[in-house]
Length: 253
Length: 257
Image (cartoon, rainbow over the protein chains, first blue to last red):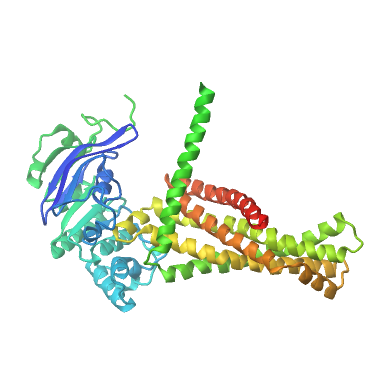
């Protein structure tokens, strides 16, 4: 369904992605892990068309999306949902306007219809309709994420991206978000790609895990393979050890 | 060699920035003229840019009109000063001070607000979110602000004209002892429609500049809170400079003919 072929991306002299390739099957939940600065977010932005790779192809449902204008890829965008790291809710809009944003803009639906869509999506993420008329500034971090998740699934997309969905949350809220993601994805039957460095999320969400290190996937495998892997880089990352083959970014020699 | 490098770097930077601004202007104008437009957001911006700028523009122009009357009176020949003060206040305010001061005040207020709002949206990924939700940020964010500012500025400049002349009239009649009827008649006699319309045309251009630079700096901001702060400062400074430069250019074009 999503086929990433040999993507390269540099910023000035810094090579962030060095030939990244990955294949995501329909209905599969792929989790990309890696340290800060490993290129995870850049890869995601390239797939979403927010950045253009220097080299390589990103094929979604048989179509190479690299270099396509927003208008040319509008039909693909309409099938994609995205949960941003900090929710990226629109400050000037109420929660129901945020959640039903895609439907309001693309179909010009009435206020009643939009509120109904928002109410339904919020219910899926276990938020009551009391929040419908609030503004994002009055929500807590966990509620922000849940509203962001509601917005990502409101238009019933068949591809969903999650960018660090549990960063900055307490362990209980992390568990809640992980389970909501699993439930929502199961309900929609969507194909998903999640970026995280939280191993709890990986164990809860992933069908397949891919480990990105210095702009390349150096390990890919299933949950079972992940738990029994002997890759020294991945083991150091999973166990959070300061000593090992992974060089800590910005550390002195 | 290092001097040449510095000069070269300056010119390359200048032309690169000009090119980026030109491209941004082109995209902004395309978004204005190609549907869909967002009437509700345009109205919202008219309120923010136009309506809420009224007090600051009114106060500025009232005192400017008053000061102008005083300066002409004390600085010039005080005999026959009624006719000179009335005419220079009317011409000065309508041709120059009304639109330029309104432009500079709105640049400070609105350009900064636009840059801060769009800049915050940029650094908190809200602009990326708009794009992924199949909404063109230029149509949703830039075009409504360009339209609203271009519509509102001539109205604000007209308000500045009226209140500025009233400021001159108030000081003239209350403080300098001018005859009210003669002051009004002299103002009316000297003022021509062209004086007012030239100021309003300039004001429309200033409105476009204010919104354009606010959007440009906000849209291209990066680097968190510091980046948004930098974008806000740059928006106000560049909009103010460009307003003064455009004022000179437009005055020479409008009055040469």
